[in-house]
Each structure stands twice: as structure tokens, then as C-alpha cells.
Amino acid sequence: MFPAVVVAALLLATACGPDPLECAVVDLACTPQYAPTFANVYANTLDPDCSQSACHDATSPKGGLDLSEIETAYDGLRDQVDPADVACSELVARLFTDDADWHMPRGKTLADSEQCAVAQWVSAGALRDDAPDAAILPDASP
Image (cartoon, helix red, strand yellow):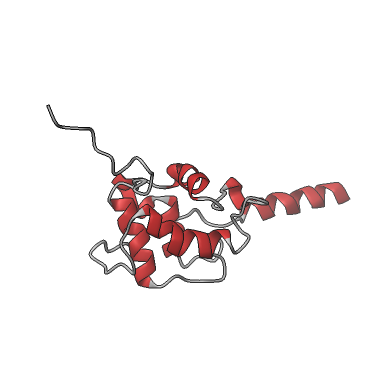
């Protein structure tokens, strides 16, 4: 009898887990805290609020997302952003949600203008604008 009670309790606990992450309500006409480039998103939000908080550092990256270096951060975020569906991009939805089970960063709500900068970066294509060769255009001279 005891094992059946334990199994039933475990099944009930997993069935009552957090609700699915819902898409955010995003107004892209917002005023960003900083220019919405990846370099700025990383330097102003991801590094100080996500990596240095020991949640997404190189030692023990929660959810397998290492944000400790700009290169690993960009690579890790590619699956969490969708410029065609900003509101449902996991990164944006987690920043904007009020659901404590899903909200990031844990225990802190970013300013609306900071959330805005991240959402606008995603909306603009989630480009890696800070890559050394990103500003180098092919030589158009004849």
C-alpha cells in the first residue's frame, strides 16, 4: 500500500507542475533603455542580471544556458528567440511574465525600458551586431 501512495503522490505532483509559458504582451513602440543591439543586450542585461547572478554562469548554467561569455550567450539564445514571433520567444516571454515559475531573472523584474530593449533586439532580427566582421562589407569597388 505504501508504494502505491508514494507513486500516486508523485504523479499528482508532476501533473500539477507550472502552467505552460505563455506569450508575452509586447508593445514594440516602447522606449528602450539602451540601443537594442546584441552587444548592449548582453552588456546591460544578460551579463549582469543573468550570468553574474550565478544562474547562467559557466560553472552551473541553469537549463544548460551559459551566458558567461558573449559568444556562448549568443549561441545559446538562438533557440530561444524568434524574430517572427517576438511575443512567444522564450527569452521575451520569460522577461515579461508575471508567473513566478517562469519569470527571469529570478527574484527581479527588469525595468520596462530594459525589457523593451531586449524585445526590440529580437524584433529586429536578433542579430549578432557586435561580431568583429559584422561591420565589414564586401568591397564594392570595381
